[in-house]
Structure formats: structure tokens, C-alpha cells
Image 1 (cartoon, rainbow, N blue to C red):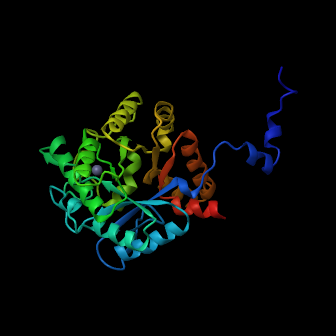
Image 2 (cartoon, rainbow, N blue to C red):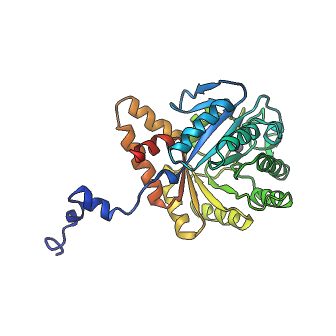
Image 3 (cartoon, protein in one colour):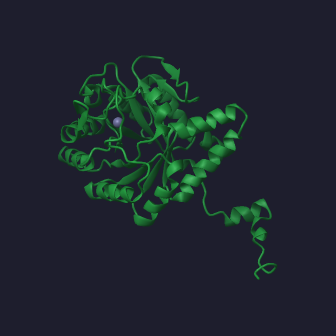
Length: 324
Ligand SMILES: [Zn+2]
């Protein structure tokens, strides 16, 4: 018989008391903004399925980074679109590659903006797979050698952090060893530790031009049905030297973020992926939902589940709301 002595509504009665009892707060510090960089000059092509997101040449990318920085967002993560794709994804580890050029240009103008780089081969291979192929099979060990080379090339260009997204086995250790041997002992690794084979990546593949020419990514990305396996994947990456572990996608996997939060003291990142972004944008455009409120509620829920940082295409929009 708690009622009427206990009335939960007292703590919701007005904005001031709601502020006082609020358990989770978002700030622009929580966000990492994903960006797509392409060759050329003056290029700014909107990704049709991701309104407000662009493939940009380095000059425009740097301008956009200045805006990200001025909004108080601490970091960006870069994805490259190469000039030429080949079977081994050569531009991924070319010191003159597009991501390497972008890193140097951003760090030159905005030394405090943290530049994280996505480390994978799928944007750079002509078959669109994340590694070296033999028939239909992705060869694990030859692939991680190339990934380590790619990470080193990014670090040499000035990347502040590298983020392997390939889901090959042993790649965090291979990258850590290569970075250390070359004097980059202080470059952290954010590993896409728990990455599911998800349909929510659809719009990203348009943005990064990385759709596999055949087959899918189920031989390396995780089965959406598995949660315990996620704990093992995260543990492996931490043992191999990951500094931050990521769960991707975010909203359909809040339970995984929460479980991981209960299981580890490592910083956790969550990737609020393209499909999660595009659905909100599309529904808002149709007038079916209040896009701004759905955006803020989604980001809040990811943080409440236990994420310390959120990779999100909403970073700039959400920072603007928070800075108001
Ligand atoms: Zn990949």
C-alpha cells in the first residue's frame, strides 16, 4: 500500500525537479562524427539515402571538420573512397591514399580535433569484401597483415586513433604489434569488437561504395541472434590490446551494450549506424515523427544503455540542439 504515501509524480512535477533527478545527460563530448572522403576538388555529393551526409573532397572535408569542431564534437572517423579499387585494396595502405591525405589536411588546420580512421579493406577492394579472397573465402591471416599495414599508414599520416572494423580474428593484436614496432605505442585502438551482420548498414554502402559484388559478410560479422558470443568477442579484443570496444549497430543491440557495460570497465563506443539515421530522417520527412525528438531520444537511450561515446551521423544536428 505505497500509494498515497509514495507519489512518483512528485519528482516529475516541473522542469527544475526533472533536471535534478535526471540520470543520464548527453553532451557534444559524447559524439564521434563519421565522414566520407573522396578524391577531387570542390566535391560535395549528398548521399541520397542519408540526407545531410556527403562524400567530400579533402578541401570541403576540412571545412566541415571545422564546423564539427566549433560545435564541440571532439572527434571524427574517416572512411575513404579510393580512386581505383583492386583485389588487394591497395589504396587502403598507400601513404598517398585519400584517407592519408585527409588526415594530414585536418591535423594541419585543426590539431585538437581527434581524427580516428576506419581500418578495413571493403571500401578499397574491387569485390567489396573486407579481405583477401580465395574463391568465395576471405583469408583471415593474409588479411590481417594488410590491415596492420593500413593502420600503420594512417598512424604515420597523423591519425590519433585507428578503428579496425573488419572482424577478422587476431587483427587487434596484429595492429597493436605493428604500431608498437614502428614507434606508435601511444596510438589507441578502438576496435569494432562486436559487429553484427546487419541490414541496418544499407545506406552506408551507398555512401562508402562498399557493397560486396557477391555474397555477404556473415562469415566474419556476428549473427544478430547471439549475445554471449558478443562478450567473448569483446574480451578477445581487450586481451589483444583494444583501448575502446565498440558495439555496432546501436539501437537494435542496446541489450548488448548493457551486458557489456556490466561485464567490462573498458570504454564502450556504440555505432548509431546509417540505417538507424536514415529511418529517422525518412519518417521525419514524411511528417510521421518529430525527427529532432526521436534523434535525441535515440542518442539518450544509447548512452543510458552504457555507451561512453556514440558514433553518429546526427553528431552535428544533436550538438546544435544541445548547444541551444
Ligand atoms: Zn569491411
